[in-house]
Image 1: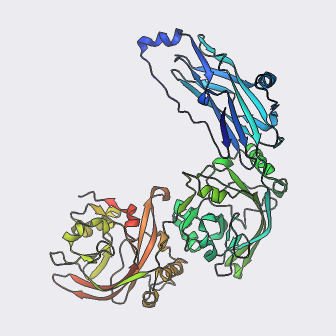
Image 2: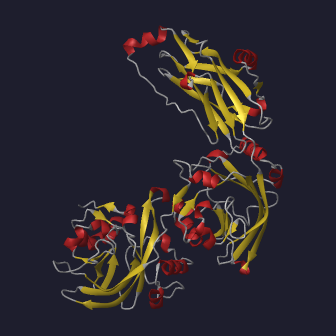
Image 3: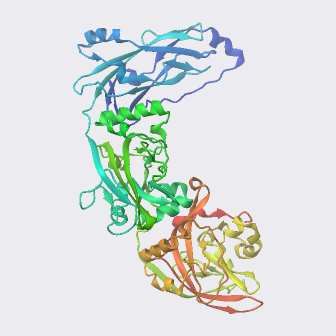
Length: 594
């Protein structure tokens, strides 16, 4: 007897192989006799299935044909309860009939395309409602009718498969009442919710600092997304970039891990919430709502809720969230009943009060330990080292020549930070920025990538990237003079470690989003001007946008004219001691002119 334990979507995986044929031999496939039978793993006719009441259980069946056919074939199946008595007599068992309320078929036909060895799948969903934990049930499934090829028949020795179904004892349903979250960040401000982790007071809500210590267990945070109030997963900024990263950034400070939770794009009522009082009722409510709303909760990957203060009105106050071992593979669910939404601090922040129901199975830890899971990932912005290192009196020349240092790199060499154009091309994948004559009497810092991204800058950067095999991206800020987030000398002086650098970026981020900025040219360099640099990642998943994950800060100490209208730039710079460049080199491109 071949056994299956279904705790997630476990599907018997058989690849569809299609074999072609020559027209000269086509008659063989039209006239030859052939038989169809059910695919049976290890040739066993009985499959044991243990249904977990806490999760959706589904099994997939397939049929096979012994010889290829030139016709499309359809084979119908039925459940055959009259076979149970014979089975029990033959095997000395006492299995009971599985109630039709405990299973459903998506389709009851196997389809063989022309010249196919195996059929399409039939998916059977099982639920534990009405099943007893100490009873074993039998569900015989039989091939009953074949159509399409007059020379094809059903193999009577392989036409039946028996599903032997039992269920685990259901876990408890947890119901937390009057849970509160706020958008306001601070030591005693609770921003994050976790179903399966608790804080020092044995509660399920966490400040940013508390959440960072268990970042892999966090489910969602309350934040303002522009003018909207939403629940977000920590994964969302990495997945979508842009404003998603900008707004989540202050809430994931110190997070080693980012977690995914699917926010469903449907709202339900307190009646639905109150109807769920057991883990089995939760599982079956999700299936019911899937069927009535037409929304596939099991494959959703949305990571942001509705606008809580405007879209959840009247009875439409219940959110459903799902999680599982894969993005868009949700096997367990939370129901969240938003009871109150209250502005605080003159409307600058909000707090909410909600009830939540979920199943008492630690799906977060279970997911973390599941091979191949992708819903708990390393945070690319997390820096395990808090140490910044300062380089003083760094000099760069705009003039190119054997003894002229044009390029700065924080991590290309332990022995040198500046490089001639010739030296730099041998380490082009590690270069951060170069001093360039933007126009007469106007010197700027350029990223190597800028000519690739913005062709109008190419003529100025090309002499410095001549022979480069790689073009690296570095975000380089302007001074933003006259704005609330203008870079100032005291900002440079106050940066002592990665944490204080991160706090400064958070301060700037209230109005200017350095984590998502893609500026690659500084403003005109002037004495005592302070600028920020950032290393970032450019990913298809972020819509080809940059996400800057490491930051440094520099101050111009002097700028001096040299030969032929060129200049020497003298600056101090603070960068993370840990190599920020190599970890962010996915933003690098091949030089098309190499």
